Image (tube, rainbow, N blue to C red):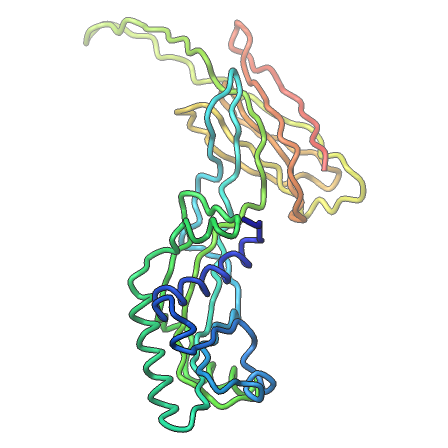
Length: 307
């Protein structure tokens, strides 16, 4: 097994899937070739005598439909900590599938036959089989690599402009969209709650006076974002609660021009805080414990974050 990048692994697996389910695993007998190259003039001029299925990756798009508001997931606990990772980024790989035949006769019928088999072979899959992806060292996780076929996303004018740019004659095509999870963040270890303490208070019956409990203290987490040459307009400071049931599950803010940031009205609990500048790299996660003194007065917490 050799490791490939997610996009490489998906394209190679798609090729294997077509060989297995479209050509029924017998490319030698069928004589059909499979190509991932750009179907431009050079491609057309070098077509072999055998029919060719071309699967050209022509665009990549961020998948917004399946983006999750819960941006973190926790792994299995080990002692007092557990691995925490941000959910992978979902990227749509858009393929244009076309068929080419330079045989002595019935070229159009041969191409239509192959297009029909592609619809029959790939149309039954809602996702790429994970074991086939594992062959190339890619494990997409629970989300898997989903499949959408025959998408009506490119109108005739767009396809005409596409073929014109490649310098080739227009062909009937099958649009295929594969949604690929890409891990762009990595994992960090974070503290976990090992003990919960509860206090119960007797509520008086109706008609008797009752004391209205005070609201949780409005605590503040603040500090400075520190680094080299930083454009603070592109920086975000993120706050994620690790406590189940905390009403403040996730917040973000931007620092001032001098790098100062603050979160107000934060209830007691354990949080993870980090800064990002949108230029990639693994953020410096910090764990913050917020509490209050015996009189209910807030205890300010200061955390300086580095980029």
